[in-house]
Length: 240
Image 1 (cartoon, helix red, strand yellow):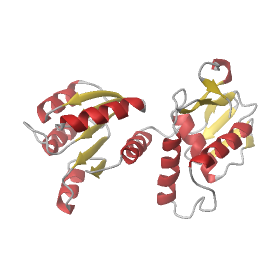
Image 2 (cartoon, one colour; image 1 turned 180 degrees about the horizontal axis):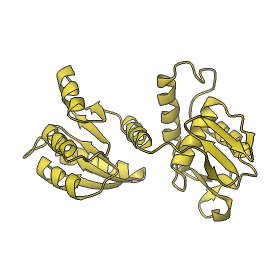
Image 3 (cartoon, helix red, strand yellow; image 1 turned 45 degrees about the vertical axis):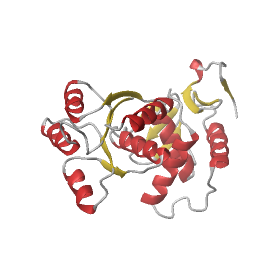
């Protein structure tokens, strides 16, 4: 996932660069608005983080020019400007999300992944191995037999499919659950929460995927990986 980080604070930019790369992003840094605008218009990115208080060309102008050029990549505004007017101006200029400083990195990461999920087309009747997955209808079946999935198991499978062949961390899983709980209040409220419950739901989903041709690998110290059984390797991974 290629990400543009437009941030003039060198210390913050360096810290974010390290953390974003650690969770799987390829990061290009723009220290001012002129460089950010040039890169956004010339280079294909999957997503961008944009500070509004950039030197040379301010972030709001960069954002407006980006949208005027019909570039539709997701943009998360990350700024110290936290008034209502600032937030409204940023969203009206074309921001897809708005996060104010100071912030916690897990929230930033969760928001980035949420924006990336929204930007991907919903696939109906997607066949993977023996699994048929209909994201639009929230249905999954194996050889015509419906899979009985709890809300959290469904979200877990959805996330693993969206990120298949890439490692998904526990933090990403819990963030997806938290976001869905906010959008669909009450759904899954009786299900347990916390880091340990991720392992429980991985175990349950792994059993339900038996015979589908898909498997969930545990990558030690990193997270979980959904892949075709034929691509399994033992290096650095182990079952739960």
